[in-house]
Length: 219
View (cartoon, rainbow, N blue to C red):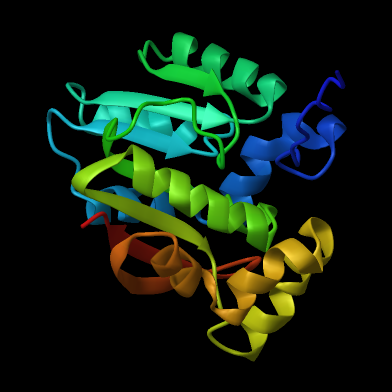
C-alpha cells in the first residue's frame, strides 16, 4: 500500500523565511485595518455566531472578530503550522480565546452545517482554480442553511494604476493561481460551488491592486 504524499501549502509570502515579515507587509501595503473592519461590518456577525476564518494566517482577522463579537465562537484554519504558531502566540499575548486549526481549505475538518459565517481575506488568490472550486464546495458544506460567506481578496483592477500595481502579486504568487481573481472569475467560481446570491459589495484600492468585497449565501 502506497502512503499518500503529504499535502503542500503556499506560505503567506511565498517563502517560509519571509513569514516573519507577513504582518508588517500586509499592514503597510493593503490598508489592513480598513479592509478587515469593512469586511466585519459587511458580515454582520451575530452575538452567538459560529465563525470560520479560512486561511487565517497570523490570526489578525480571527482575533478582531472575537473582539468585535466576544460571545461568538471563532475558529481560524490555515495549512501552515508555522504561521499558526505565530497566530496562537498573538492570541495568547492579547488575551483572546479563539480556536486555531491546521488543515486545508478543500478538505475542511468540520461537520456539515458547523458555521453561520465563513470569512476569508487575501486567501483565494493563493490557490489554483481547482482548489478554489473544491474550497467553495467545502464552504457550502460547513455553512448552515442561510449561512454566509464574506470575502475580501484581490479582484479586477479598477483602473490602469491598479492593473500595474497588481503585477507585484501576479508575479509573486504566480499567474496560474491569481488569474481567476484578476479576471473577475471568483464570483462565478463561488456560484458554481453551491452558494447563491453571490454579489460584489465594493472595491478598495491598495498598494498591490484593487481589493474586492464579495458575499454569498447557502440557500
